[in-house]
Length: 332
Image 1: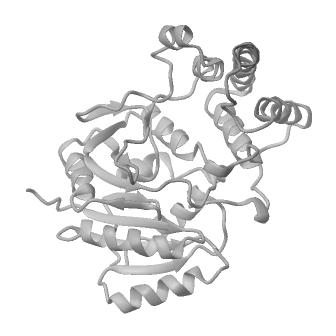
Image 2: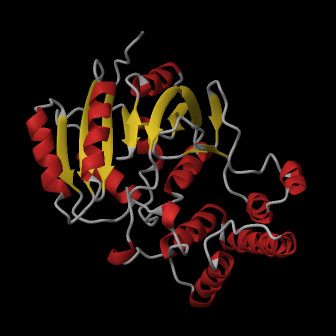
Image 3: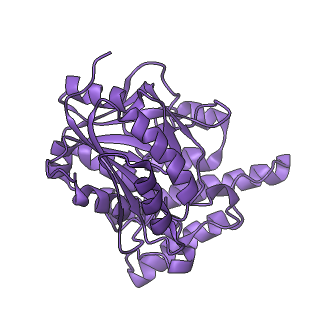
């Protein structure tokens, strides 16, 4: 087994999940053994004693090269990770690789090394990501194609013949068993080359939550950097602990803002409008089929109406996405 000699900075972002974050920190410290690495735990303005709890925990462990910092504000997933990246390594050396880890994600002992080794051996690769498994051992979809007008229709219509026709546009890909180049990766366990980040910039902090890693990977691809999914790097992920996604009864405003901002920033306002129209047409067809065939609901209540109304309001007011109010914020 080889060990990467590159300098690594691991960023572990917490929002009101201090106990789980300590479990992630233990797993990360084990996975960083033997590597030239530091871990910075960022508390994203939890306001519930998390910062003090995590600071005391790290002090009790007496771990070298691990510290806890406060972001100072809850600006979302991207802003919190950016705070950790900007904080840098305590030894003053610039990291070669930046490793993003969710507080509900637990890397296996060699998971981080595998990502770093691949970057060492493939200088054209800017981003690597892990196989994400749930606690039951099933694999989560964490490797994707970029969203498009066609993918919006395919997802919304939920019709096998259409999905087969547009299979090359489907956002989730069938998870490969070997390393494979993909468009983008979920940010639960993702390593980025610092040289790439210096070229394309950090996470766009206009996104509060969702689509920020999609947009960053798109910027990387447009700058000539590759993104690679590495199933040999395994991470267990509980998922949606901070965001509450599995319990949504209505789609949050920040998700709608992020989706619209992604399409508008990346492809222009006209493309964004066509993407929403495509989703609306597919969604109406699906709902007609659902009534006739008595299929169960597949979206949160009022999803399609909220999606269309949100876009129409943005067109009428020409309003830019804004951060979610404090009471609505959910960020890892």
